[in-house]
Structures are given as C-alpha cells and as structure tokens.
Amino acid sequence: MKILSAAQTRLLDQATIAEQHLTSTALMERAASAFAEWFFGRFDVDDAGEILILCGPGNNGGDGLAVARLLYQASYAVRVALLPAAQHSPDWQHNRQHLPAALPVAEISADQLPDIPAGLLVIDALFGTGLSRPLEGLPAAVVAHLNQAKARVVAIDIPSGLFTDAPQAADTAIVKADHTVSFSLPKLAFLLPQNAEYVGQWHVRDIQLSGQFIADTATPWHYTDEATMRGALPARPKFSHKGTFGHALLLAGSRGKIGAAMLATNACLRSGVGLLTVQVPGCGYDILQISAPEAMCLTDPHLDFISALPDLKPYQAVGIGPGLGQDAASLAVLRQLLEFASTTSENRPRPLPLIIDADALNLLGQHRELLALMPENTVLTPHPKEFERLTEKARDDYHRLELLRNFAQQYRCLVVLKGAYTCIATPDGELHFNSTGNPGMATGGSGDVLTGLLLALRADARLLPFQAVRLGVYAHGLAGDLAAAHTGHAGLVAGDIVRHIGPALMRV
Ligand SMILES: NC(=O)C1=CN([C@@H]2O[C@H](COP(=O)(O)OP(=O)(O)OC[C@H]3O[C@@H](n4cnc5c(N)ncnc54)[C@H](OP(=O)(O)O)[C@@H]3O)[C@@H](O)[C@H]2O)[C@H](O)CC1
Ligand SMILES: [K+]
Image (cartoon, rainbow, N blue to C red; front, side):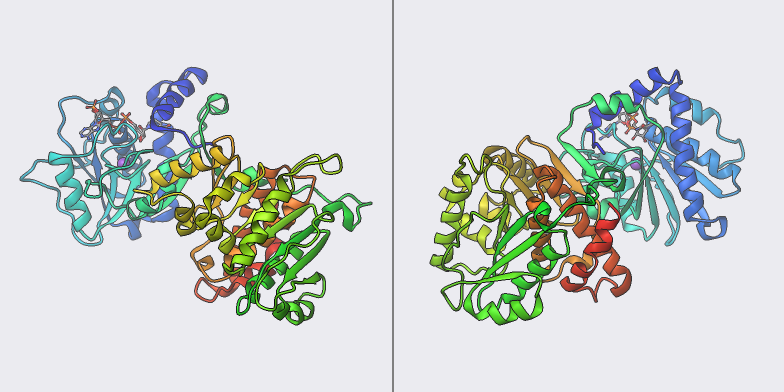
C-alpha cells in the first residue's frame, strides 16, 4: 500500500472527483459516512454520552459538520463548536447549511472556549491535511484547552496541528487523540514514534479513492499490510528436495551468548531453509547439537568466540552477528566474509547474500571502511541505536528516515530498521513500513529470531532480495502477534516467536 504526501492526497481527491464524476460534496459525504460507520461500531449512544465536535474552516471542518449531522440523525447527543474564520470552504458551507436546526452550534472565542468536562467525547475536525503552518493564536489555545481536559478524543483524518509528512518543533500545538480515523491510506506521520502521543490508535477506512491515481503516483513510502503479503511465499513444488531451498550458514555466538545463536538457528530452521550449518565457538558445540539436531555444526577453533571463516563454497546465504561479540578475530572474519561475498565467478555469478546483525553491525560501525566492501543487496538489521553507530545521531524520526534512505542508496543495501513499524530501506530509495508486531516483541532475542528468518528466506533462490526481506519482516511480526495471543505482551519471549513462525508463514 502506498503512503502519499499531503500534496498528493489533495491531487488524489481531485482525481477521484474527476474520474468518478462526483461532486466534492459527495466525496465529503463518503468520508463522513466512513467515519460515522467506524464511530457507530466503537461507541453506542449510551457509551458516547454527549459529543462535542470541534470544526475548523476547511474541509476537515466540513467533514466534522457532516459527521455531526449523521450522528444526530442516529440519535447521538451532539453539539458543534466552530472556529471563527474569515473564509470557509464551499463544502464546509454546504454542510453548515444542512445541519439540523435543533443541533446546538456555538462559535468559539478566546474568552469563550468550549466547556470540556472529564470523560466528554470530543471529535477533532479542526484541521486536516490542509494544515499549512503550525497552529498559533486561538486554534493553538483551543488545542491546548482540549489537551489539558480529560476528554476522550477521536480525530478525523489526522490530529489537528500535526503535519502529514514533515517534522515539527517539540512545543507545537497538536491535538492528542485517543483514536485517529483516516481515509483510504495511512499517513507517514502515523508511523513515527515521535507522533504516537498525538495519533493514538489509528484506523483507515476505505472511501474508494482513485486506484488509478494511486498506482500512477510515485512515492518513496509504502505500508506492508496483509493484502500486500497475500501469496508472498511461493508454494513448495511437489518434487522439491532439501537442495531446492538453499543451504545457509550462520556465524553466531560467543561465551555467554550461545542462546542468541540458538534462537537464530531455530528461527532459520522454522523458516523453510533446505539445510543449515551453524558455526559456533567451541563452547557452543554441545548446546547446538543437543538443542538443534536439525542443524549441522561447525566448531570454531576458538573456544569463546568466532575466529575463523569456514569454506563458503557450499552456501547460498550467510548470516553473521547474533551473540557474536566484538573480538578482533571476529572482526577479521567479518572482513573476509565481505571480501569473499563480493567476489563473483563463473560458478557464482551473483554476490553471496549476507545478513548482518547485532555485534557484526557494531563492528561495521567501528570500522566504517568495511561498508564499502558490502555486496549489493546485503541485508543489515539494526535497531535505532545500532543504526546511529553506522551513521549519525538523528535530530528526529524524519531525519532518521532520511539517513536511512540515503544509507541504503549509497551502499546499495537493504536496511531493516527495527521498531514499532519496522522500516525496510531499499537500494532504490524506497521505504517500506511493516504492519505486524507488538510491544511484547521488545524483548531479548527477538532480533536474533529475525536474523534466522531472513537468512532462510535469502537462501531461497525463488525469492528476490527485497521480496525475501519484506516477507521475513512481516512474518516475524505476525509470528509475534500469534504468540502474544497466547502469552500476552509481558509474557512473550523470543522462543515463542520461533514457535509461531510456521503458522505465520502459512498465512502468507
Ligand atoms: N482525503 C480525502 O480523500 C478526503 C479528505 N477530506 C477532508 O479534507 C481535509 C483537507 O481539507 P482542506 O480544506 O484541504 O484542509 P483543512 O481542513 O485541513 O484546512 C484548510 C484551512 O485551514 C487553514 N489553515 C491551514 N493551516 C492553518 C493554521 N496553521 N492556522 C490557521 N488556519 C490554517 C487554511 O487556510 P490557509 O491560510 O492555509 O489558506 C484553510 O482555510 C482532509 O484532512 C479530510 O478531512 C474531504 O472530506 C474529502 C475526502
Ligand atoms: K483533524
């Protein structure tokens, strides 16, 4: 699913109106009905109690007026408060004229801010995607007044004061909503941690905007949802054998962190790999052989950490990093691996697929000259702190996205920036936000599981590099969601994610 900018959203409205021979009023009615449907499903008349709808001067306010009418007609107790303005949009005026006469309407003024008792349900329709600058004066005062009240707040389209796709100063007046109900496509602002306190839980309701316009519009931002992933994992051919799905190598573990190697190993085994060989330091041999009999084991000459690179010829993909530690010998292994992987020959016309995680990323951060050795489509899986070590400290979430995009383009790699909406950056400058996963997955070992999953999928020659990574990230989050249905968020451990990879892959 694409994510469009505010400017593109405006054009999308116009394209929809032209393509479907609609009036703009009819499109507004569609948006208001979609919002009202959501609202009816969420709050019944008794639960809602009295409802205050705050309306601005543009089409977001117009939506609010149309919603007021629809809720009133459905017997909700609604009152409207209007922000004074010199001008109102034509569709605002239409919906103002069509408000039922008995519905109470008041005009807001600086010395008469609306009364907002605790628990009141407030619908925020002050400003939407037409916001052109930060709020000041009376609109900012209304927002501050709303935010300090203990109301339940539902925003139409976007919390008022929040930009759709651009950063804002920390002290800007922005509505803090409990729910945001948006139309047809999610907005970039919803996906960034810094906006979570404003957006609350967000929901997207389809209003049949022009599919053709969306398809024809270029954007770097994408959202990977269930529909995107349907059929993403090709079925296994009947006459396949273990060689069909690739032989993967994992280089992982050090004394005290063999668990990380085990989680990545088990995740890889559960993700459809044909064969898996794992190289662990000597101290990990018994552990690995006993707890993962399906994997083959190579023992590193060193007892405590990885110090030597094995012969890489048998493998279709290599993962390095979980529990690795940062010894100089492991750094040398990483360097040799990068050099080998980039070298192509008649037998191996394409670079060897690599997944680099955890301490291997920290080693790269300390020795950035190694970045240039990475073969095209190498997969890096940093969390924000690890990413910072590879680049620089980001000013805010938008700046971090910019750094992410530039990094993936510069090094022609795939970067998986882990977080609530894990974001994959591609060598072509695309950013794909993932929809699955839950806060229970913020637990030790969760990243090791992702590395194992990605390793299996990169070893599968049927999948293109980006397809494999997007599938792995989506399945990882989905496995976490399936696991959390049994364990809850607090009780979730990384091993639970591993156990649900199979069921998650079945769904794609
Ligand atoms: N996406 C869809 O498919 C549909 C969306 N709809 C709704 O329409 C809004 C967008 O409506 P628009 O009229 O473009 O914009 P707004 O309502 O957000 O606000 C525009 C007015 O607000 C003024 N403005 C802008 N910034 C400020 C500010 N900081 N302080 C004060 N006033 C401000 C602006 O004036 P300018 O001075 O900037 O010219 C306008 O007067 C979208 O969000 C949806 O809710 C439709 O219903 C159709 C379907
Ligand atoms: K709004």
